[in-house]
Length: 577
Image (cartoon, rainbow, N blue to C red; front, side, top):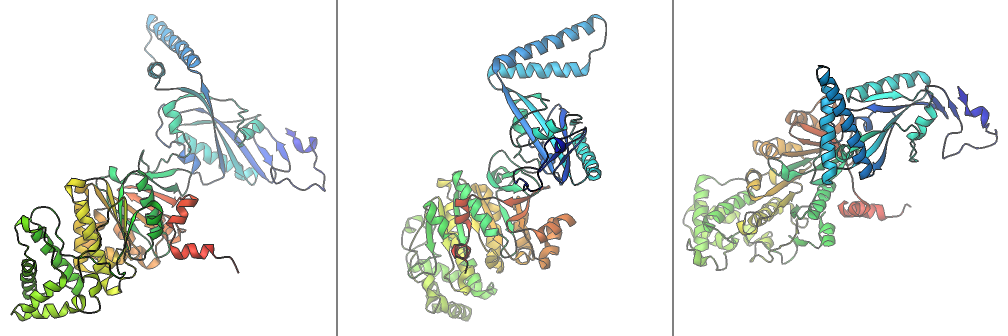
């Protein structure tokens, strides 16, 4: 045992260095570094095949464990010569065994096949050879705990088919090999090809990841990156459930921004005007419903067969949302007659040649109902009066003022009265769906419905959203449902169907009052329940089928500015008083 403390005594008046330990005591199997202890291991044996992110269990170890990977490229000519010699040794050994009548060694056969494959890859320029050293340093507060921690780490390595050897009598070299100084003092290296080295990259996640898609963040218990491609799933829909202030809109904005990088067109239904800064920054279109002069005519015809019939069906849904409930059978029949009469009043019939004429307005429907002799029709016209001649007529009192197009379209509903929020959401979704379902303009699209509980609280609106979730995949589109009220989404069969038709499900921090419902609907374990109850802002659980991963949302400084809400940005920019 050699003690550096005796060789380099520290004066009593000298302060401890902030950049390193005050002293190091070297022992055969461990080091005493400052007030703690550590032991190092060199990995000398590896599995024959490794998958992507195979180092993630080591990076996610709950104790303090330093993992160092030293990589040195081997020149192509040197690698080819070494492989040639290796193949010659293996082949000569096989021939010697065959000449003496011995059975072939399976390990030699496998090694020879691997060497041939690697040599062929090098010859074609598809692979390169690297010398890689993998070293581990375990830390603990005292020797007894260090021994227990070392046993845990070696057991973990054994489960990964790694042979971890202690750096006995070379403990100082082992420790320095795991410091971030790039020094490999142990020189216990193994040959890796390009694929094996890429799979060893520390930021690869072994839990849930994809080779393409959108970056959501990092794994909570490790350094892996959570990269997920919604368009590679069975359907492209997703749901984001979280309590207020958990970061659900923040995550939705990050996903929208990063999807734009991939050429995906985005449409957003924004009840609280949170996406305006994002739209202005990326040059998107911004439609401010509720502002003076901004109108949407629900009677506008879309191109395609049976245009009048399809519009009539939508007007039935719209009237049900306006009235807060579906009309009774007599009123429904009167409404259907009134819709046909409204179109005929402006000269629009089933003939396609008449569809270019200006569409009727909601007040034309009310006039047709009022002219009907059926008392149910006149009663329905009276109930529509606030939206045709009353205080809420601004949204419908005229033809549609804008038809926005572009890579990002945001429909802001903040200035609409609360009585019209659900109606505004329905109208914007209808406008978006016309563009999504247009066969002449097919491309990958995402439709983000923030605060979806506004629409899910109405049965007719929930049914429209359900139909959209069912049909989006056929038009190469994905629906993102964002809500803070999980009870409204999961408390009805239609809401449960929307969740069931979302291949990607994201749960952020939850309230204790809703965790039981979520646990039953998503099959959460006790640990997942506890994690969601105590998750920090931006932390959550991404579930795709039976695969789940806990992650933390990750954003750059520029993305963070765009993803925050206006009030958060104002508070952060305000100096402390």
